Each structure stands twice: as structure tokens, then as C-alpha cells.
Image (cartoon, rainbow, N blue to C red):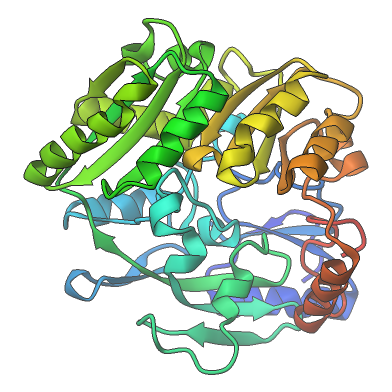
Length: 411
């Protein structure tokens, strides 16, 4: 290998191993990407080569009756979802599509990228995130060694469950070449109950009441009036919208809708979305459609804030008192997407002070490269956790070959 400054496109796991071994021998660094949809999330890459795994495609095993699927890491998520849909199954963790939010095309993500970023959607409050459905993988560490972790069933782990460690590591510990995930039956239908006209504080109470009931809510979100109109034409009547999703068989939904409406009636006027309207709404919430790069807020800086559900409204209020911002509340208020007006520090001082007051953590999702480099994209870890993160990085990648500085400077 001579000129390695271009993007490298391995054909198989052996090629991936060879590239990492070359980088070790030549003291080079590598950025790992799947299909590139989340490439601008995190600190800007300062590397010698890009290892793009988009050519490692294909579903290698799918056993619907066993609820298991294996695929090469570069396989498009859209291809996997279409295959599952044909068998009335789904990825229950409902991974969001970062493409439009970051200025790219929709439906371009790879399954490896979904797992490396530990993605999820509104159903996380019920089904968990990607790591909770990640059964096994084959990967190449920063030592240039191929290893396998996990297998094809949930209860098969002895020793370290490395899959859970790789989920959310953003390609800084290993390059995954093959992955195995759990699939689940797709609900027969869905419906969404709306509470109209609430502010964020009152919406938090309504969502808490719904989540604390026996109605088995699988999505709880609040959109202020301006965002509601942007996410769905069905919500364009004006006023804030608090949405609660129910999924399952039709008779069950009919019963649970009545029960949920009885619980929510004291909070305000109610509405209801049919299955098609409900699906459209929750895709918009999942992908933060009001803040997408081609939308009305395209030039705004976007933060992803995670806090305790009942603290979401207070967190937003802390920020809004000091900067121009819009907020979308997901996961019953525990996840707050914030779009801020451009500023010299991306609002980092205000956001991080609000997080310190309310608890949680903040990730700068969309900002110019210079800002992401200067202030960091991922939340700074406390000293003890930062030391642990550094030891984990050194264990997998002692020479810092894979995505150095992608998540934190110096790691």
C-alpha cells in the first residue's frame, strides 16, 4: 500500500484487517465510516485515511422464527428494514435517521453505523436503544486483530460483552465487519392520542400520567405549536401538541385509547391520529424533522440533551431564558432536542450550565467544524469516567489508530 490518503473501500474483513495493520506499521490514523451519514457528528477527523465500509453489504442470515438477523456492517438500514417488513417484523429500537438533520439524504445509513452510534427513536422508553438488541459481531480492533463477540441469542455471553461496549463508540475502538441483531414482530397497527394546547411543563405532567398508566404507551413527545405545524400537516391547527402512541392489535388499541383518553382528559382538549397519520408523526419526531438541515431551522445549531423526564421542561426553560432557542421533547421529556441561533460558542456555556443545574448530558449534533473542534461535541466526562474511557481506548487501540479525537480531544 502506497498512497493511502484517499478513501479506502475494503471488500471483506480481511481487507479491513490489512488496512489497520498497515496503519499500525506506518503510524497512520484512520477514520471509520459506514455510509457517511453521521460523519459530521463529533469532533472533525484529523486522520491520514478514511476506511469506508459501505462495500461490505448483504444480509448473511435471517431466521424470522428465531427473531435473528446477521448482516455485513455496510448493509443499508433501508434494505434490512424492507426485508423485515416483508415478514411483519421490525427493529424495535426504531433507529433515527441523522441524514436530513446533518444536511444529507434520507435513508442512507448502514446497520454498522446505527450500532456504532447506538441509535434509537421514540420507542426507546419501551424497547431500549440499539445496544439492547445487539447480539454479536465480528470486528477488527486497533491492534489489527479480528475478534468475535456474542452470538445469535440473547443469553449466550460469557466473559465480557464487547458488543455493548462497541455500541456508542463511534468507530473509535474497532471496525465492525459483521453484526447480528435481534428482530421483533411489527405491531399490527397503531394510534396516537393528542393533548392540545399544553405548555412544556403541563405536557410533562400529561406524559408522566400516561407513562405511569397500564396503557403501554410506546411513544411520548411534546411539540410546541411552531414545531408541530412543521412536523405534520395534520397538526397545523395551532397550539402545542403532546402526543402519546399506542401500538398492538386493533381491539387492544381501541380499549387502551379509551383508557388513555380518560386519564388525559383533565389536562386539556384531546385529539386522535389514525394509523397513517400516527406513523408520519412519529417518523418526524424520530428524525427531528423540524430541525432538518433543509427546513426552516436549517442554519441553527442543534443540541441533543438527555435528562430525567420530569426535568426536560425546566432544562429547556433554563436555556430559553438566555438564548434564542426552540425545543422538541421526546422520550416522555427525557430527550430534548434544542435548536439555537448561531453564536461564537454554539451556546455551549448556557447549555452546559443548564445541564449542570438539571442533571443529564448534552451532545452538540450540528455545528460548523471549527465549533465542534473548539468546544467538543460529546459531553466532557467526569475525571474518573474519563480515565476509564482512556484505559478502554488503550486496550482496544493502544496506538490511537482509529478515529483519534473523534469523541474527545486526546482520546
